[in-house]
Image (cartoon, rainbow, N blue to C red; front, side, top):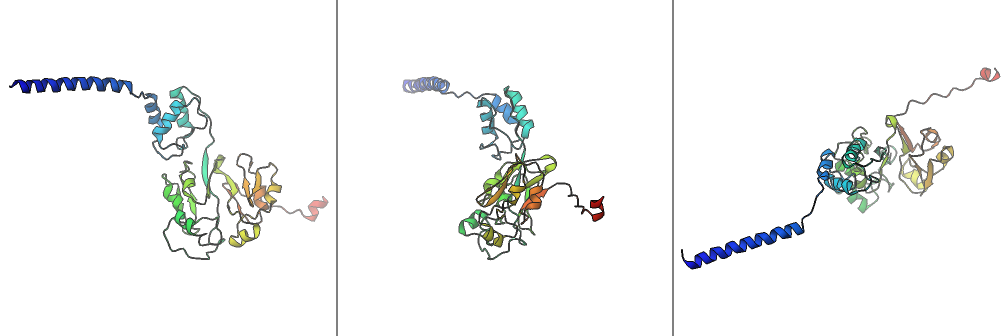
Length: 287
């Protein structure tokens, strides 16, 4: 072997050693320490990566939980309180109790109540249709019926009813991830507090037009008559932008507003049947 080859081999070897030493110190200098508790927290998360927590995925949420001083404002809607309690145990923090919520549709404009006045001939996408015109009915606030919300749901908790042409939410499957809320261009889906026995009571309308135009467009539209506000003894109902809204935190489910609503725009679910009113007879009054 010639001296030139030997010198070349030694030079390359020394260069490799020096480079390795330099890379080692650089790696140590810029080494990023990752808290091992992040992996522990991520393991107990549901791995849905639905974004319901407000983060891009479960890994990002786990990092936020580890870095946060408290759990205020942090919640995994899919895992619920059980998952948050487990995460709190791992991190030695206190879990904040968060009331479970469920998605509701703020529209009841079925074809029987909201007749079709035009025909849409385009892409079956709510966002596209919403950007083009008011829709196939005279209500520019109602559901467009293309099912963007159903497509966005990862938990099979929604489906389109072919008769009503409205999305139906399956309470037992809904995890309140909020994907359907983001998908609806008309903001017709809201996450409301989940009550006992899955009882729900809310104004199923989003039409902000004045009473006359709203009622002509849909027979069950809220006309902001304020009868529900007057009937509520707990201040749970307000009128804003020609539309009644029931505050779930204040509502006691007395259901007086339901019977007072002249357009039947307030819906109630999973309540026991109302007792029939007994008319007092003259004989009973005299006695």
